Image 1 (cartoon, rainbow, N blue to C red):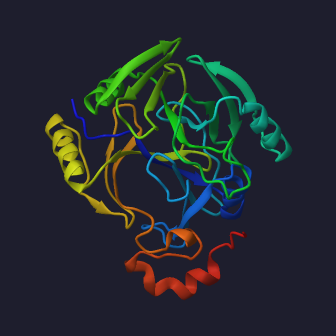
Image 2: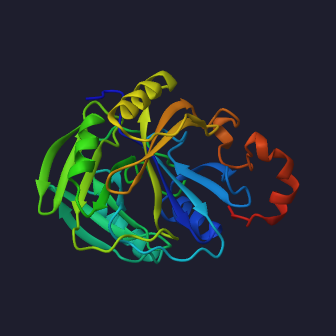
Length: 310
């Protein structure tokens, strides 16, 4: 069993409208946009990152807003709900705030003994706020939500699978342990993680397979401290028979990717070098940052990418 993985690093999804996406995460949820860059493979599409003050691994939601993309269809073989941790007793605040902001799909529920508020993202994405126990991670407090209520980072993510057994075996190999089960959901967690420690495996044998589109998670990333730890994980996965990409430089972290038995795309990403490698912390996410191979497109991109607003 591996011990290098320390919880979630980031979750990356698809969107239809960049401005709407930016408004949802920075204004409605009060997160910080920590990076405004472009898709490595499609530079005419933004890659937007939202998280805490510095984009700490375990707090970062990222998006590819493809103009005119079709709506995704939820089903088996995808990340289901991405859940954020909030302080105890704050769900009434969030219910009122999100209601006033016009957020849809609001539903209070209890899962594994924790109070949750489920809600929809702007493209039908599935989110939840969970009243977490003793979460000491610092919050971003300049997004319109005070420290006493603000999001701390990810709490968990769920995987919606026709048969979760092989993916559960994989996660246990990656260092996760089963800590609870309820109905068709098995909860796994990594010890001594970064706070974003939980993966829920939801078995939905009768569900149709998901179709990727706006509102779909593209991939889910797990955190390792550095490149040396990442190479150890890569070798272990290769030795186990997984087809893993070479290490890829994503400017703010190094990444490897592989497809899981249930169909979900996993990434293992380094905590280094971080989002302040090309911007001062005080100004993260303000300027358009371009990968070196796309630097020559700056004039075109600054004219054609959709303005995000404040």
